[in-house]
Every structure is written in C-alpha cells, then in structure tokens.
Length: 423
Ligand code: GLV
Ligand code: MN
Ligand code: MN
Image 1 (cartoon, rainbow, N blue to C red):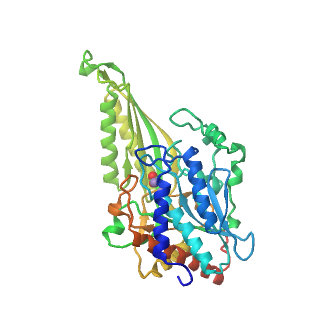
Image 2 (cartoon, rainbow, N blue to C red):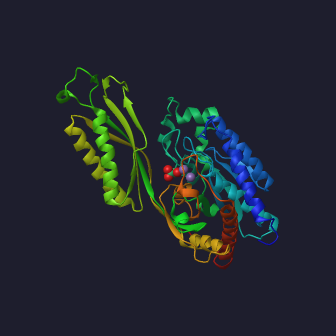
Image 3 (cartoon, helix red, strand yellow):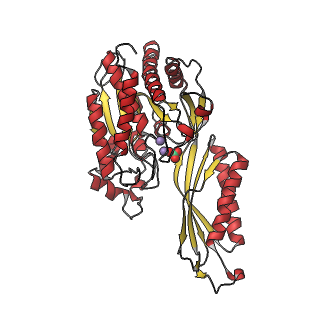
C-alpha cells in the first residue's frame, strides 16, 4: 500500500503483540483468559493503548467489549466494524481471535497513515467471551453488541457458582445498562473479521488466505447420564446401573452418527461422579458440541442422537437428559462484503482465492443479525487451533494485513458507487 510503512514490519509488530497478549493469562503453564476476570481487564487496557496509538478513540462498552473508533469525513457517520475476540478457551493458542483484533488495529493504522479518504468511520471491536469458556454460553460480547442479549443469561453460573450478574458487577459493569452496548443497523456499514482458519484446508491447498462463504451453526448441550452409585466389589453385573458404561456408549454413538450423517459432533468434557476407584459410577455429565452447514440438518441429527442416547442408556437401566446451553444458527457471509474480501486478497497477488465454509464459530455469527458480515481466513500450521501449538507464518500475516486493508478500500469503493445498503 503506497504511503503506509513496510507491511512486513507491521506484521512483525502484530505477531509481537500477540506474544504480549499471550502473557496475560490466569495460568502460569499456558494461556487462559476468560470473561470478566482480571486478565480480561488487563487485555482491554493493553489493546486500548495500541488502539490509541493507531489514532482510535477508545472505550469499553456496557458488555465489556473494547471498542476503538476513527471518524470518517462526516463525524458520527455509519462505521465499518473490524474485529474479533480477546478471550480464550482453556490452555489456548495465541492467535485464535487475538490475531484478528490486532490485524484490524494495524489495518486501521495503515489506512490512517496513508490518509485514505473513506466514506465511513472505522471501528475496531475486540469482543469478550466469544468462546463461552466461563459461563457456557458463547458470543456474549457480540450478542450484546448485536442487541440480542437474553436477560436469562444473568443467572448463568461459572464453575465456582458465581453468577454472570455478580461477575459483571464485580468487574465494574452495570448489568442494568447492558442494552447500551447494542448498536442499530443504521449505525453500521458491515463487519469484517480476519481469523486463523482453525482447520487444514488452506495449508493443504498451499494457500495463505481464503474467503469465508458461511459459518456453521452450532448447538451445545450439557447431558447427564444417571445410574446408581454402588460398591465396586459387591455389586453383581446384573444389578449394576453403571452411568459411565452407558456414557461411553453415548460418546461412541455421537461420533458414529456424526460421521454417518455428515455433521461434526464432539464430546469434549466428561465428569464422573462420585469419581472413586471403588464405586460403580452413579452419574456422568458430558458435553456435546454439534455443528453443521445447514441448521435443519444439524437439528434433525440432534433429535436422532438424543433418541439413540436415551435408548442406549435405558438398556443399561440409566436415564439420559440433555440441557441446551448454547445455540447459534448458521450464517451466510454477505455477497458484497465477501466480494470485497476476495478483492482484498486479490490485491496481494492471489487473484482466485479459495472459498471456505467455516466449521468454527465466530463473532460474525452474532453480528449477522445486525449487519452484513464477511470473513478472511489465514492459514495456520497443521490446521491446529484451540491448543498451545497454534502457529502462523509471518509472511501470511503480512498478506492478511494487506488483504484486510485492501478489503476495507474495496468496501469504500463499493459504497462510493452504491450508497448505503438498506437493511
Ligand atoms: C469457537 O472457537 C468455536 O468453538 O467454534
Ligand atoms: Mn476459538
Ligand atoms: Mn475465535
């Protein structure tokens, strides 16, 4: 980009900042940064400093999202939002979400330095709680901004029994004011998110960047298998109602069914009670994460899974119950913004970038109820994510920075020829 500094140097700074953010962790042996914790406050402070350096006016919104704004030629004009999230899963990598936020800050800084005349404001939003690690329900920050906050969420509890309401107050937020975080469609031009792919397709295709076509809809359940805790020595097999044996069958049913029906399902958490070597397990809690390109297909597979799990458990004298704690419908990226991302990548020399369907969830899903969304994917090594081994190439990050910056210019060019879309 003419007028802006060396993109390689800016990308190196983005990567160095990802390292600095990674140091803000609640655990000494890895990365964990979750909603409404001291690490959340610290990362917002750190990134706010970088946003201010880039020329953005910053504030933390009523939901705990960090926002930064660069006005366009007309103060108060609608904004193109760029962003991703700063929270993590347990024992996370350093790029999931964080890279997208820091690329957005760097892109805005480059656009400002070149004096690019944009017909809209630019905002970077660093969302909190995309992952749902602490309270189980994901996308809390982006749903607050989208105006789809559900007051029932205030009663969600974390592993220590602290409610979301208590945690928000302790963090310094006013639960009664969460509606202030909501934006209206008229304030926005759209939302662009850069993110690591979290899968191996770009690497397998030997490509740095890709255009996201749609994002999988996800549902998450907390399931309980109830049997009977009995003496591990004295209880004959024909009198056992072993909840763990039943749960093991459920885990395998989930994988078998998902593979056969072309959806993605994972049991990632299993908790056995009472969890003693000499007691037949009386109760098992297990999680099910279910994703598919089409919501109706995902929902039909869930009904099949639930009925199958009930049957398997009943055959062992156990009960099966499921509680849904997260649901996000699949989202299609908006054709015009998606094309702007394609043109952004084309500006880096890849004139026919690959198109990918995202199997991972993103803040863009929540924002799609509010405004047009599109996403740019960046290759990650081995397709590995949600693990400390997450890694990206410096030259890919430089290409992503160029592409994101060029995508913003493409949106501006579209806006000049076709004024504000009506939603
Ligand atoms: C978010 O990272 C997800 O689980 O898809
Ligand atoms: Mn993630
Ligand atoms: Mn993410």
